[in-house]
Amino acid sequence: MLENLNPAKRIEAPKDWRPALEFDGEEGWAITPGINHDQVPDFEDFLKLQGFDPEFYEVVGTPRTSRWQKYDGDWLTSYRFNFRLKRRADLDLPLTWKTAKGKKAKPQVEVETGKALVIMLSDFQIGKVDHRGNTEDLLKRVFASYDQLEQKVKRGKYERVIIAECGDLIEGFYNKADQQQVYSNDKSIMSQVDLGVALTWELIKRLRNYSSLSYATVASNHCQFRLSKQQVGQPGLDDWGIVVAKQLARLAKETDTKLEVFVPNPDDESLALDVFEDQFHVLGMVHGHQASRPDSIPGYWSNQAFGHQPIAGATVLITGHFHHLRVQELGASHNGGSRYWIQGKTMDNGSNWYRLNSGSDSQAGITCFELEKNKHYTGAVFNV
Image 1 (cartoon, rainbow, N blue to C red):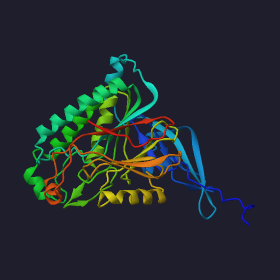
Image 2 (cartoon, helix red, strand yellow):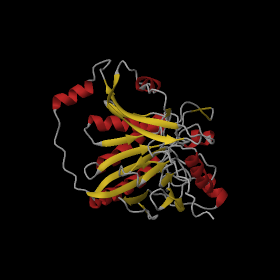
Image 3 (cartoon, one colour):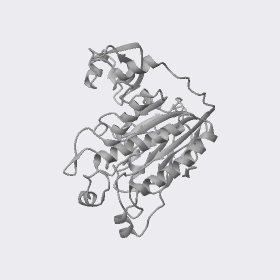
Image 4 (tube, helix red, strand yellow):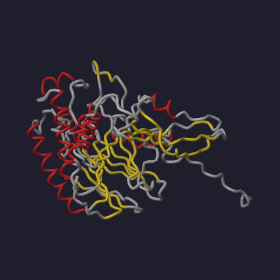
């Protein structure tokens, strides 16, 4: 008796509706939250709220719009617009120096279109001393993995390589086991961050001549700004991993290294990247400390999707934090394939407290996987 009824039309928010902002020091783009159809957007006011004074920045070009319908029938519109630095408050000496020197020709990168590599740098926890050794031992493992990655990327001819720093790049001093950190760490907080910049930049230097490079990072518990063990500040801004990413962006600019750097919005702990800019493969990133145990991550992800959070449209979600490799196929994706959750290996010097209580441990390493344009991902990974 239902043959003549039409199913209700599925109404989904566009994949790029989420508020976001990216700025490289000269130019940037921003996406506003949903605005009611009878309201006029104020782009300058939106920039000002994000810390960009309209006196120094200006909106350029024609905004793009995305519209969707709410449950109550009303329509919302999100605007994506471009902006740029209008004038400088002081002289930019590095830029002046670079302009005077002129630009050197870059070697042409031979790539195969439609092929990307994701490198998961997870839980280096620089400065930590445990059963796998100290910082010197960590460096040996990292450089051995970098050697393998360089050869892989050199042979792979990837259209894009995404270096996904999944959090806990440094050990810090103010986590739950803060007294143990004070007792056993072999690097100060300043030295940990300095070495974090050096190690990530080393990988970028090794790979920059072989592929288009992107670097992305998310907020994490060991990198959080904490006072008396309590997190303070904005999660996507006041984080040592975010600080490292900003230094990498500056280094790339000063050395004419083509590098896209992505960080969460100041009030977010996660982000998503459209790998081939076609919404087929959407890579979601979150550290994982938001869940109390690994088995809680699928539920956490589904709740994030229900709440239209940054990883809502992700087809692959990658996490760190839990220090072992895990690949799990989950629900259906918008591209017709399955969603996958990949929990990456750790590179740290070990977790004695977990090993002594659980009896188990895992081998350190860096988890990687490939994505192909318009081809469903099926869960294959490799470790170096």
